[in-house]
Length: 191
Ligand code: HEM
Ligand code: HEM
Image 1: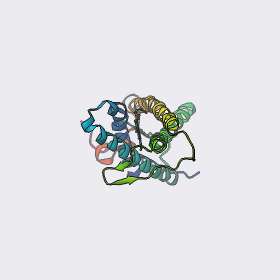
Image 2 (image 1 turned 45 degrees about the vertical axis):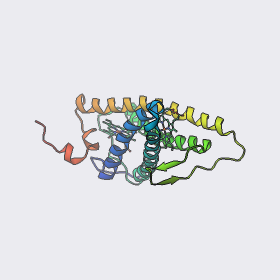
Image 3 (image 1 turned 90 degrees about the horizontal axis):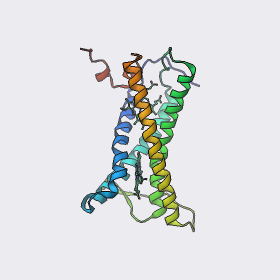
Image 4 (image 1 turned 135 degrees about the horizontal axis):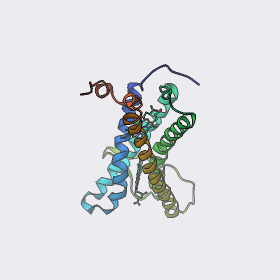
């Protein structure tokens, strides 16, 4: 396993973290509410949801590869072994969700084959091939159930993750949060 002596996340990891985090904050409420939007904007809302979701999938795969090639800084010295284990488990859980969430969405629309996914109004994203003879409606509903279950899992894990980051910053007063912030924010002198 590669190791590093870096004390902060590199700029690529930081950029990908915040772009994916902000997209996720937009995607979860959008997913829940888009069904009830007026018909005039509903179709566009679905297009944005699906396009941003495919973008998150591509960025998350890129981030995972980047992460495997560029080990992150070590966790703070003072953390107990079980705290380190939980931190790593939470991070890998988030990586899993960042890939499984969009993938189940894409599988759902691919099983249904009713509406094409038009990537930001630019061009069609192909459907993921499905086995011959499957029950399209039942399969799509099954993926939708998983998509929804994962969304609840994501809400819980993101809440824990944010709470942990804030606890490190305001209670333990260590560098866990600042090392994941862009340098132009983390290097600002405190008033
Ligand atoms: C970061 C990625 C994603 C997140 C966080 C996300 C989140 C959600 C949430 C919370 C819902 C509402 C719960 C549900 O009905 O399942 C939803 C619905 C939906 N999502 Fe996603 N989604 C993501 C990616 C995608 C992708 C890539 C697609 C398709 C290409 C997609 C297609 C859909 C569709 C069609 C629905 C509506 C299901 C229905 O109401 O029948 N999602 N999404
Ligand atoms: C306000 C929201 C958020 C804050 C304050 C935050 C903060 C942080 C911090 C401080 C770290 C570094 C932890 C460490 O050094 O060990 C981190 C890592 C991470 N965050 Fe977030 N985060 C937020 C939202 C999210 C969201 C929404 C996701 C996923 C959808 C996410 C996914 C991850 C992952 C996967 C890592 C592990 C990075 C690695 O070591 O490879 N974060 N986050």
